[in-house]
Length: 176
Image (tube, rainbow, N blue to C red; front, side):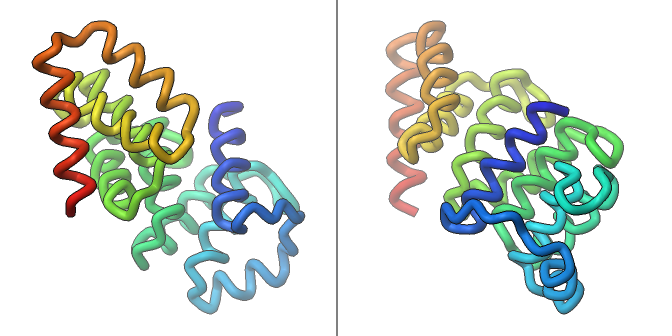
């Protein structure tokens, strides 16, 4: 749960462009109900953290899903992480991979890092250290410190050939 709250804070900063202001529950809810994907993702974060609303993981997931279905990378990331953790809904690694992949394609470093973890552990996908390294590397390139550490750990158990393959995958990803 603590990890989930920390992630919520990080995503809140990402969603607000760095402005860390206490969201106005009423206006956020109104915008979310009108279909605003940013407000939907923010309302989900508020429910996950219990900020200005009662803490409710299931309600958080409801709002993440609404944002995610509109293509919102933050909503997709949080929905994927909720599936991975079984937070507010039953744990389902395949669904986690699905939503995190959509966010990762948009360049969301938290999603890329989370996909790296799933590949490293073989959850929802076959265990693949090369692909895990690729995702960690992509997230690390955006300054995500935990991804830097994970990338270095993955690299320490990889062969030179595997490292070369991971680098090629990164280059292919960036050329998309």
